[in-house]
Image 1: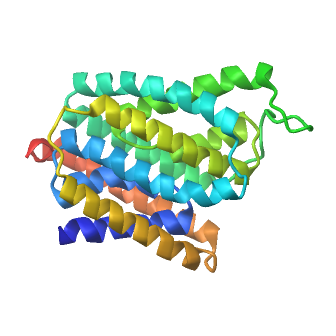
Image 2: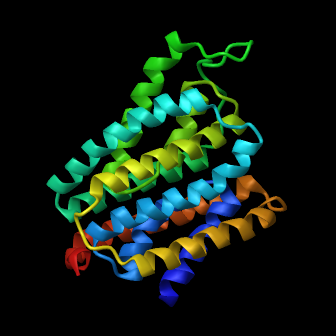
Length: 260
């Protein structure tokens, strides 16, 4: 239990400092830190990510920083696809899932080092409506891809959703962050439902981990305003690379640890 509290708080601090991305460390923390088998760590991670995202999205809802219709299309496609990702997860050996997850972490780290790029195609019209002709195919395609990854790896996908919303759909960054959090909530709920009943869950550990993550994120959010966000993301990217290397090495040289 103390380990769950400590790791949950650490991930929450990262979420609070960075505004997203820290949840990608939840699966490795639950597997190698807390000691859960991968079959339990994936749905547990989705529960942690979903609850943490609910906490984070509420202030942005009040600030009108969520694009509800785009979130509905993107999140709806992702929710359906999450069941396909969960089915794929059941077909693959845990070793292959962890190696794929390490590769995904490398992509996430690279995205963080790359920084923000200029926006792409515009979904929002000047009058406040949505250009569905250009937006709908992109939203469905990107939502489906993120949903598959959610079900397969147990990640909310915020580090992929935000670039898709900004670069592909042309949302401003403030709206992309708020909309992404809502999409992550939907995807996490669908992914958790898709994995329900596969493995026994230790809800005491999950509750401790989640409570610590939420508390850590709320505390660190205040500190994050005083720190350089570019430097924070760069150092976090290096941390993600290191954890990815550790996960890949463990999957290759110590596969027995995945089913203990």
